[in-house]
Amino acid sequence: MEQRQLTCIGCPMGCPITVTMENGQIQSIEGFTCKRGETYARKEVTNPTRIVTSTVRVAGGAAPVVSVKTAQDIPKGTIFACAEALRQVVVSAPVAIGDVVLRNVAGTGVDVVATKAVAAAM
Amino acid sequence: MKQYDLVIIGGGPAGLAAAVSARDAGVENLLILERDRELGGILNQCIHNGFGLHTFQEELTGPEYAARYIDQVRQRQIPCLLDTMVLEISPDRVVTAMNRTEGLFQLQAGAVILAMGCRERPRGALNIPGTRPAGIFTAGTAQRLVNMEGYLPGRKVVILGSGDIGLIMARRMTLEGAEVQVVAELMPYSGGLKRNIVQCLDDFGIPLKLSHTVVDIRGRERLTGVTLAAVDENRRPIPGTEEDYECDTLLLSCGLIPENELSRGAGVSLSPVTSGPVVDESLETSVPGIFACGNVLHVHDLVDFVSQEAAAAGAAAARYLRGERPESAAAIPVRAKGGVRYTVPAAIHPAAMAEEQVIRFRVGDVYRSCCTAVYLDGERVWRKKRQIMAPGEMEQVTLKRADLLQRPDCREITITIEEA
Image (cartoon, rainbow over all chains, first blue to last red; front, top):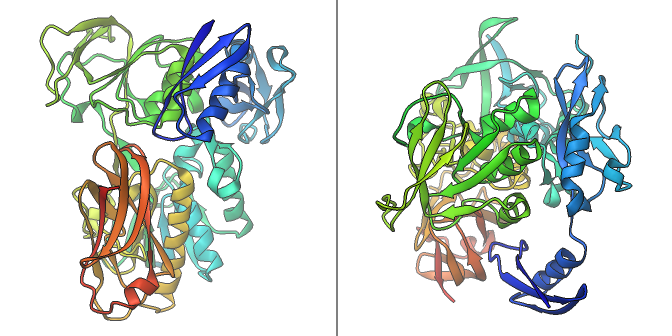
């Protein structure tokens, strides 16, 4: 038996939720006060994912860095590997919103795309 | 002097949405003045996602949200002057500004929309004892350095204040390889959104110490450490609870203040609660023809509401320019009572209001299982149950025009919190 303590992010209530797990199976979810809390807890203990946002260096651009995001949410456990991989990336200006700056980041199958346009340096 | 029907001060989310709305309402001759090198304002440094759920039904990053509005401004060929600093607005709407190409210049505006945003409370406003070394930044300054300029301001970090920007920067600095040791919050509750506490602190094991503050800052050239202490219910440090932290960086996320130097110079009345202009239902300030929206009016949590408010200000400025003034009947004051700290708007002309007027406000404490209510004089016309309300989250009530028209003698609108 394993217990996981979560704080629901559905609203400012921030209900403390306790999930009891056994062999990776949810035994019980307690502490939520609405449906959103239960849904959130279920996802958080079985498959927690996040959109990761960061910046990467730009060569020859009007700005030194460009903001980027994972095109979809990636497993929470791969956040640091994703951030580390992005620190090695340099893209060449011009950059458009949606341009892929890194494919299949950290083996997640998800691409990282630019979220801002950067023109070439004047 | 060049003449414009409408001059918008600021090209951030509020200025952009106001410009689009004013143009769509028929204002042809308008101009946006922006002091930064690009449009988009604070959104350019808010590279995290979560913007636009209300406006676009999807989660965008700040730069993406800004780009949607910048595109709308460009499609309408609304002129903008970048790198242009507004120095003064006169009560009769002469705007004095300067930039590198035109030097000092003046514009006569038919109407002005104030959209200058807000600024962070700096160290000087916090009265923290200690030395004055390098390494102390507001969270927003650090955010700009990391996300736009490509610098990491430090490697070992303590954050004072749990405002959303501080929480976001805790995560951001961690992802960039810095060690964020702790977030200290003076109040017994966080000033930030629950979602940010979980996803920016809990996800990375960063502790949040409520009812704690910084009582000492050490270091000669560069910050070498700070001391935290617990505070009592009067927010005074409790002797014996001090803890030393070694760090090279202290980030401050201790509140945002609307930036109203220009408004003050124009003679606009400011609210002592919000530090923003006092406005009516049309978002018009005490100076005729000068409107305000976005964070210069009151600090928002969600950009979607800034865009909504700014669109309303743009439409109202267009009505003003067409000469559609509220009837001479005096405005009815909106009073904030029972835990409601302020309301926007603070007065309503029934003749000029929409069918349904949204009144936004903040509460002064955490309230559980209570109701928000609207009274017209002594009579309650609206009531809604709320599970929880907190100072960090903006609230709203709706006032129906029909309710006011049925009560032509109404002298006061009251927004309050009451027991369920």
